[in-house]
Image (cartoon, rainbow, N blue to C red; front, top):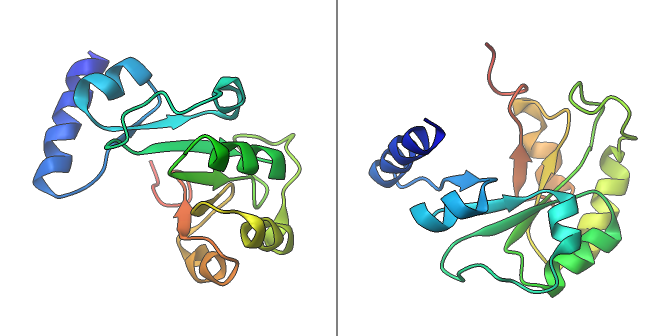
Length: 141
């Protein structure tokens, strides 16, 4: 059922020139779409073992994870949590000042994640991010 949904979404992405990122490596390989690694998956990876023509992204929370992601050829990363977030209430937010400092040192494109709202885009750009990543802050349901 998930594979069927992913195939339909991939068709829509092709139609609208959008990029699909999945968290399932086997399905991402099969569909030829991007793969987003969690931080534990990133830490376990010692080299990029994913096609260069497909985007490879990772969730990062520390400077060390950002350095590691860049060293193995990750295309971009999310850096989080910037703000308090309901999905990870125990996580200590970075805040924009720390995010900005980490972004200045990063050698790969970053997206701000964690407690993001549509109105945070300008602040994210000023802080060195390519943009924001969010679900709850952008979609209500």
